[in-house]
Image (tube, rainbow, N blue to C red; front, side):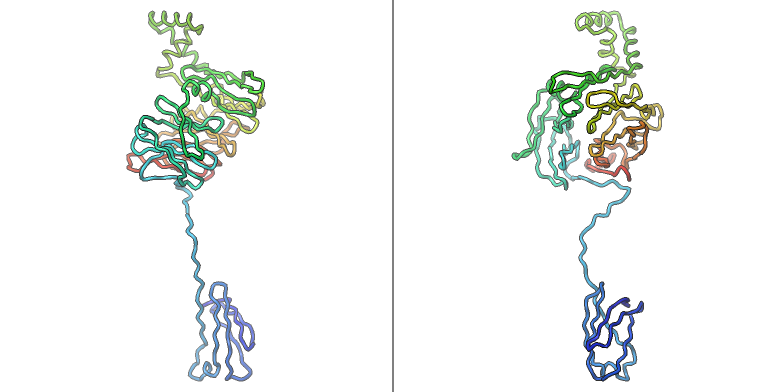
Length: 410
């Protein structure tokens, strides 16, 4: 039955609307031998025009109602991807190669891919916003790639076992150019960010539990000291290590002190203790967002907010990293910035594989949202516009390593 069907007759007897059972009634007061045309219209059915000879239709043998059959409209719907609210969205996959690393280049994505071993046969793939490959570059077998690195000015570098290459995309396609290793280590990697004509860099080295942040004013061509980061507990342990050196090693450190001007206890820390079981590298990253600097000083349990000059505007206590002492949740010593929103997330790796992103409120220093990723032990994690991207391959699986994303707020 078709309800709410609109019916008009010609010659005009009246207009009618079918009820819920698809029925309508009409009455003829004139000549019953006339022909009447019925026009039936409904939003979900094709228009139907039927002409009836009432003298035939109203024969005594025909005691039932008149029946009209209408044809339903046929719509061809476009294919729609229905995504699960729980499962991650697959961004890129391939049956031929795995994704070792990736970097965003505006709306495009640069992928570092390999078939069997990253060090032996790798390639670069440039994808558009719809993850269609628009260019590729097979790397020479002599290039033993390890990862991609994006610097403060959005330039991307390809790091290998013993060399560094700048990656460029132009009208001639993807190309790589060798970069002097000393220049890369001393002038590119230490620079953490930039605001206007000020470049911010650190003196961090992995062999010593203290370093400084500076700002270089390219217009005035001078340096400004911002903050010293010191892990006092680790520094005390470093200095104490000198007492346990053999006489021969103490003499060696004393001679190095005369040659370099550094204290022998510091040299001991840099040369001996940093390779020990109890040494932890100091982690205190600094980021810029708009005209502000945000320094996560984990050794002093403080989050500092500074202006572009490095002047302190505010500070709040932080304690999320102290949960390292709790066996159920381990801080991975990694803070991620959402390049689209300016929000910060502390990365935690729980025993058993579950990975969490805990959003840190820059006004209070407290965690105000926790996102647990679906897959265990993801890698190459990045946050962009409230979405977390990562690579993942199931343990002991023949599947290649794919690129996934999940919504932070899901």
